[in-house]
Length: 304
Ligand code: BEZ
Ligand code: FE
Image (tube, rainbow, N blue to C red; front, side, top):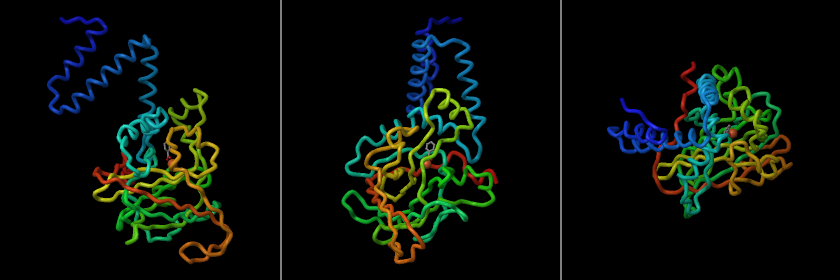
């Protein structure tokens, strides 16, 4: 009967994975075991603390639903999502910066014609026109590229957080396909800064550790052109008071956009503005490469 002291135990567990057929899986499991064992040794973790951690992770899992991903939220607030992003995008070569996907991406969005107003009926938000262009690193326009966009409303909620989402359908999310000049544009409302959900174990941890739960205002973009690295990013609104303290550490200077304020009656597509409006203009530059666009963990339709 083998018996192990605390370092021999780590070696024994690593040996137990010796026959793992996939070398990458074997490597990841070995390193995970080493890091977890190091953590236990370094902290002299007590049984109570370990049981608390197991209970916490159980509650994180129980909070997940087809439209709520508490594990992504946990990864985000621990900075793990941004670290995974950083180690996978060390070479930029002028490509647009990347940031977190976040838990509110629900999969391929419904394609809409350029200029569509994606705001929800009866909203009270300030109007915004978004105009954008997708190019390669040399500025060559990329045509026919699907771009998924999504953002929170002027109360700070995503459509998928609303009780009626599965029956009423999406708002403030859509897919646009770039034209021959790489351009797309749409109408929406100005997003505001918002708290990540605080009604679950992750939000509770944020509150109990005296962190604030806020994300600065932004619009999400997922640009997925064949032959190029999929681009997962946000465009942040300049001047937001949370740009320096995003709860998920997702802000990069290059992703902050100046928003122009207009009172004139005509929007860039020549249609009447019906009141004051904001203009967001941002170009995305893609790096050659490959890779599949992320799939949401759980498609919203699974709940239907
Ligand atoms: C978001 O921007 O949608 C988001 C990202 C990370 C955590 C929570 C929300
Ligand atoms: Fe967001």
